[in-house]
Amino acid sequence: MNRQDRRSISREYFSKERLAEHHYRSFNAFLTRGMQEVVDEKGTIDTDIGDKEDEEPVHVELGDVRIVTPRVREADGSEELLYPQEARLRNITYSAPVFMEMSIVKGEGDDERVVDATETKVGRMPIMVGSEKCNIAGFSDEELIEIGEDPADPGGYFIVNGSERVLMTSEDLAPNKILAEYDTKYGDEIQVAKTFSQRRGYRALVLVERTRDGLLEVSFPSVSGSVNFVTLVRALGLESDEEIVHRVSDDPEIVKFMLENLEEADVQTEEEAIETLGKRVASGQGKNYQLKRANYVIDRYLLPHLHEEGVEEEDVRINKAYYLCRMAEACFELALDRREPDDKDHYANKRLKVSGDLMTDLFRTALNKLARDVKYQLERANMRNRQLSVNTVVRSDVLTERLEHPIATGNWVGGRSGVSQLVDRTDFMGVLSHLRRLRSPLSRSQPHFEARDLHATQWGRICPSETPEGPNCGLVKNFAQAMELSQNVEEEQDLKRELASMGVEGIPGIEGVDSAASADD
Image (cartoon, rainbow, N blue to C red; front, top):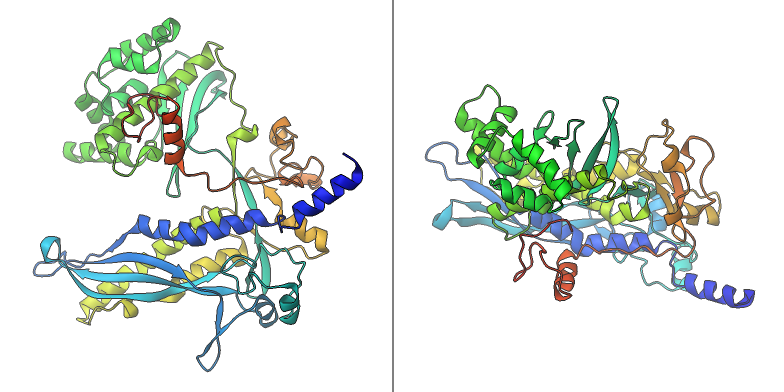
């Protein structure tokens, strides 16, 4: 292929506004699906009304959410369409009103009745310039010039208080995936299998460690220290020695390791295991409370990603036990040199959070804040014997503030900073470079030599030469020129069905397939 052909292909490729396309697609997916999914997760807002005698309980049900295009409210109360250039010049936020259906419901069971139901404005959402809800989407070059916009501007950024801010694509370790590696704990090299279990914005690190004396221990959130592996899988419903060993592996050498673990086990039944766990998570409390707390902890904090809609709690627990057995097998395989330790810098073990994913995290916390405020306003109105009405209990500035402030400052939920940055307007290439930048969550002050290195799997994905000098070297990267970012591949059920149709057995959550096999998907 000669130079002329390459030029024409490149020109054709970039004629379709591809340079900031990953931001558009991600943000559009958030507007069309992500927002509604977050609202559906929340579902209802419960209140403390009804705790007293002779008082009917009250809760709020959330319905459909919709967003219009950016508007500005003028001094006389009228609402006009807002264009990006006007937002820049007037130092205002390029945002659109968000409307949500809400119903205040009194009573419970068969006595439930709707007191007030309406669609109300819950706040304002900053809109990405060039996204499908942007007022200039689909404009011709002449129309753009007429309203003061640059036809060559790639978009893909937000305007908050007149400042153009871009959300940095964030690199992270892949969630819900088993990674086995060596760890030098207390001076000894031990084998560790870890999973970042993620569901609905909550992320829990679950570790299975093989200590120097060959025993397996599990660490997960809300339990201090580590729990004996056999105790935990028995608490999850996997009682018999034979079943535990079979679920880990049928390999004779691994079976020998497992028998050592079973000999050292303190508990033999599910009840004993839950009692032992209860003493760990609620020591000094009554027995009933200990059991309740132990059950809550293993359901809430242990491998939350295995919770699926419509799956019975018992099946979820048994799937958790099988998953832990798979993690144990990874530890033993590492100890026997049957597998290489997983490479954290391999790009198959990474996932990228683009604008839509970051906005989903932000909207989830903003909605939770709004829900708390609605609960407070409802309880206050009820105490003063006022008429309960949706429009009076929703304060729209609560959601607006929670959405605008992080984009304006860069201080994101989860304690991250520098997520949103001022668009580099030094020149046109600087803008394009900034929109295609990628940042690692690792600390700038630590050496992290391997993470900063160029990895072979970055070929064709990450530019090998565009990275800053100094402390950010190798941690701030840029996409390669013709990189395509695949998105919305979270259609897990479709993937599972495809695998099942190809004859793969033991896929959890698929009817007609034995869910008893490994849950490592």
